[in-house]
Length: 269
Ligand SMILES: NC(=O)C1=CN([C@@H]2O[C@H](COP(=O)(O)OP(=O)(O)OC[C@H]3O[C@@H](n4cnc5c(N)ncnc54)[C@H](OP(=O)(O)O)[C@@H]3O)[C@@H](O)[C@H]2O)C=CC1
Ligand SMILES: O=C(O)[C@@H]1CCC=N1
Image 1 (cartoon, protein in one colour):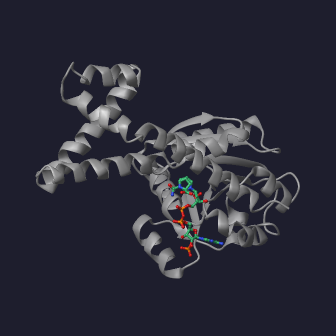
Image 2: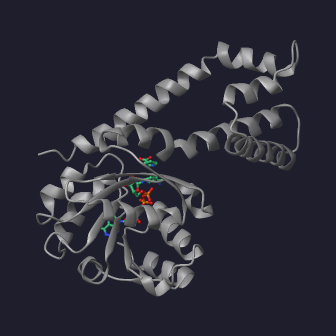
């Protein structure tokens, strides 16, 4: 079994560690690096996984998963470059960062796969999109696919689509949480106790997601089935349209795509 090291065990790095453990990986097959010793102690206590430094991770792991913020990539690459060999596969989870950045900064031939996952990884329901860098082979892509299929679903996309993917599914869970939060507030406005409003909305979200995933019906068909003539739902839909919610979503996701592109450009030569 290969050894996987997560470089930067923050929100997504921890989600990956916990998802892999949940999926049956042994703690001894996993390593992580962190900047703050107290965070390392906390994670080792929680998961039984060993904290190491970057050179040790590069030496001992077969797969290095880069999960630092894009703004923190340069010092990490400085540490990694002298320590890594072509036998190690680099998997970058960083929004916006192109595989070409790794190709420039790491020794020639190091294989890199760019991935955009999302946080439902913690419950085995991630959506991850993967793209091969210049030196990554089909076998490397299969390795990453196998690794991530333990924590959710995986699709292959051309790297040119990764900024759009980041805006859709990378950030996507946040949009749903935002919507749920606003709908719970609406319940409060209507005078429901918070606990009741939360239960009503969260189970409605779970049910709607299950229908989308399991019936194979188009979202429009599913919405139409809820929308009775001269009923309650159409009154709500009219308000959503009047307030431009559809246009707001298009603009929001376009802004997220632009930000992903910008994060990548910040590291251009
Ligand atoms: N959160 C999400 O939903 C998703 C995030 N991503 C991507 O994953 C990456 C991480 O995001 P996220 O988990 O949210 O961010 P976090 O800030 O939560 O995690 C990054 C962690 O890495 C640590 N770190 C920074 N530099 C180093 C270093 N040189 N060595 C070791 N550890 C280091 C940070 O420490 P410190 O606290 O000091 O900064 C932090 O704990 C980003 O590039 C993001 O684009 C991708 C998909 C989804
Ligand atoms: O907000 C971000 O930049 C990261 C990338 C996708 C989700 N979270």
